[in-house]
Length: 145
Image (tube, rainbow, N blue to C red):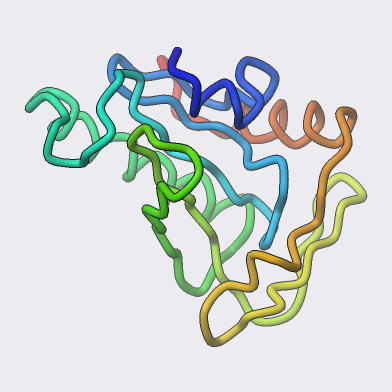
């Protein structure tokens, strides 16, 4: 796994594993269920990904949207490719909603709704919360991932 994936807490944050991508729980949650969708390779430019990674991206996104719709009941979903600090190809996936969502004793308000996400107001999860939310999302993931 590349350094960007490790910086987002891999393997403790691993929700789903694909041939070319991983889905990780984002340790700082601007909205409940925020994820990182990261390419496994060393690519630092989106156009540098292999064709197979682009093809698999469709399935990863479909799975993310299915799981987060069930788990969070989002109104919108944002995919942010920021790559300012962490150089390898990755997206911050933020389910968006009005108000607050909670699961397993963790409540997160979408402080930016209905405008841009308020990344600076994210809830920092402790190790136990990361373990709980990661395990919960894994149980909802389509089988075989």
